Length: 325
Image (cartoon, rainbow, N blue to C red; front, side):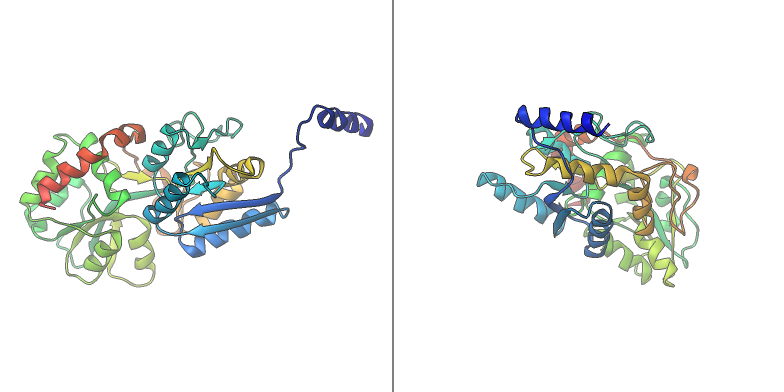
């Protein structure tokens, strides 16, 4: 057995091929919160101690601005990118900036979560649903409930002009709900307020300034656990979702270790880390965090990242035309 291994190694060296190993420097650009990013790095290092992985962290727009400047200078630095949304990944894929990881094992995942050509992979699911203050006159169970007279002037939502999750949410709702953009026109007629980001929505509803809001799930669920007077609802028609995808740059200097990082994020161990961090894991067999309903109670609306990549300017314009932004 040892002889056969040595022979294979010798033949590899004679052929001028590198000996593949998960080791050496590896650089990740990410929009994860600092604590989550450090936990992710620490967990990967524990599994691959010979990989010297470091990360640069900022919001997705700033991460992408940094990467774009490096690309323009002909010197992109990261091996890996882990950011908020798949639409940005689709743009990089279309430009030939991503490397496919054909060997990634997706057998445990349902279709439609990851890029079918394996250029980017979902690491978790962050859905957008409805938050309401416990003083609200009713519990909303449907997106249509936000059109009720009792909700007039009491709804706040993030703008697609300020939030990538809100852009995906608007595209998902208008592409799924009957009437498309008529839903948002009716929200405007009901004096809904649009602007800012998800954190602004949480503050408005938690303080009682507004009684209802559209927001990403983990924010109100975490704040409720801390005592805030808020509840979160997954509407019966379904929810939109961003997936915090991870991808390997086509210019990666350490693609072997980068593929190991992808494999770790997709593994049961990597998905349980997402659970520990308080997110919905993309892996269907991993439990949900405390405060969430059963997985089968959360219905995901269909979403096509490639389609939104082509239509995002129109989606922003249509939203801005309705809400005067």
